[in-house]
Image 1: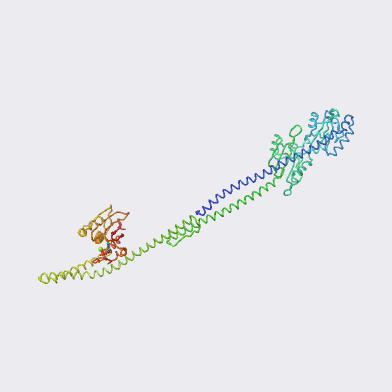
Image 2: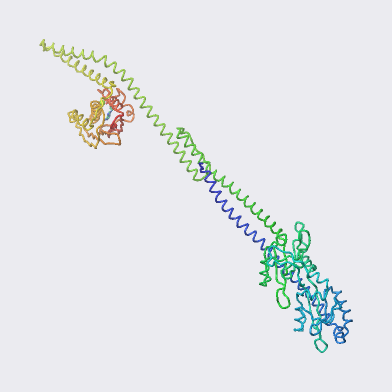
Length: 637
Ligand code: ADP
Ligand code: MG
């Protein structure tokens, strides 16, 4: 396929635009996507901070309750007085009022004195990290605390059921084993109890279980995400993990159940549980993509025992991203289309004039020189078209000149041909009578001489004049015959220098008489095929003319040279020259400026040169001289 210049132009434009467009789109998508995701991630990060605050606040509330209760007078009195029953009633009341799952009093060695949840519990040693810590440090403390199943069982069967969450096998989790959780996670606070004088009596501890307790996660969701909904689903989710298992969450299974019992993905496990670091990522949680943030939950000893999670459903951000990309790409595409259009118009505005010039050149090549190109813009294209128009007009001028010249030449040869026929006829008819007349004149002269009538000198003189004039008639007739003789040349290899020398030899007497100096500049010339006699006649006619033009003497310079497959012979005289008005006529038969001229010399020359397929040119300046140039082909085909 041939791609025109328009095509190439637009193609390269398109290429550049497409390249830049693609680059812009790539960069744009990259930045838009990055930006939106980063924005979402920083939001989820700050959401996690708020969630932690809420979590800590809850823990703090419990601490306040416990500390306040621990300072109550009835506790010291009850312990010291052994009135545990009264304490039990009082603690049960506090537990109910404060919605605590457990509230238990121990002695200074950590043995249970009173459990508000289980009045039957007494004497066994409490098995939990926070109480152990307070027994040792004797300070108020609160922490997330893992309590083993057995210990929970001592408080309540109900709580055990909450804690024992069935573990759901999860595809990308690190741990695979199923079964049930055999511990519970609590928000727990513990306070030491002292006598008035500072003797350590024991501890009061209490708190709420987190397993299957959705109060906290829903509060986080409501406070942080303010119930924001996207496409009918809540955007924000919060989850509390015990170890790697979801124990409280508002992420839901497709059937609407809360997705508890599932495990966290392996990469989160490694980062958060093993390395104890916060983790922000996009993750597929249960059934949707989320932008997620996780951070470790630690117990009183600083050990990571669980994870606090918040996640934003990514759909909204993905949609935002999509929208932004679509908008961006559309803008880009519109831009590219405009650029393409502009480049197309630009290309056309450049190429249209070019096309005009091309078609105009074709027209010119076909011979229509009237073609002109018009370009209205003021630029290089205008210059191009102007010089094109100039070229076209000069071509036209030249062609017209050429036409004129050829038609003149044609006319001349036609004229010569008709005149030749006429002259031949006339000359033929006159030749014999003249010969006859001459013969009789000579006869009369002879007779007169024999008669010896010498006295009649007048008669002899008349006869002499008659003879001379008749002879002149004879010469004219012969010349006419020469001119009219359209005989084809008798072609043979001829050395033109030889012909020239011979002609000069024959005219040597005349040249000397006229005081004409001859200068020869013979260049190296090959032999040419020509008629020796006709060439000789040609050269002689020209040399005679030159002689006659230099009445007071002068110089005739003859130069020969080879030009390609032609031989050029130049005769330059220093004679009186030919006035411009005569120039077109000198080759006409009978044109002469001489009183006794025949006007046939140059006609004969012209005929011969033409029959040799040669050319004759003349340049002349009045009072300076004339140059005749004859070109003859080396060989005639
Ligand atoms: P003729 O010599 O009989 O006049 P030609 O045909 O030979 O006829 O020449 C025609 C005319 O051309 C001449 O009369 C003369 O006016 C002019 N002519 C030819 N050759 C020369 C020349 N070398 N210098 C000046 N005029 C010339
Ligand atoms: Mg002559």
